[in-house]
Amino acid sequence: MNDQIPIPGAAPQPATDAPVFTVERIYVKDLSLENPNSPKSFLLQDSPQIEVSLQTRGEPVGDGIFESVLTVTVTAKVGEQTIFLVEVAQAGIFQIRNVPEQDMQPILGVHCPNILFPYVRENISSAIIRAGYPPVHLAPINFEALYAQQLQQMQAAQAPQSPIIQTVQ
Image (cartoon, rainbow, N blue to C red; front, side, top):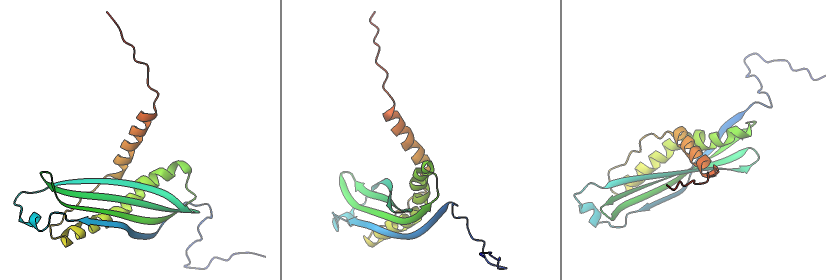
């Protein structure tokens, strides 16, 4: 007989088909710092223009195991002169099981980058400080809005083009 007797105070056993989402590991996949015009750049009086770009990607690496990578590049320029460039690829390994296929892309494109963002933000700031400059603190990013915008762009690119009708008068 295989009767299970509940143990008082023990956590209930999860159903085997219940959705699972766990963070297995968070790590820096790549970090690059360029300080091409030092020491001259430390003598500049003008405030640099800061450009921030980001990219996300997620892919399976095993059965129910996914890697999500958030890459952020921060470039500071005065005119055409690059003061510094920092790029961090912050990655995480996530266990995602029993989730409908249509929900996987939003998880990898929104939820995982939201988890990785505080880490990439700290690593960017720390690298810039180590390069000898005041820190750049990245503003919060709405990954849900970025994901929705990307979906709209993809749908627009895939939409059949209507023929151009030209009226001559």
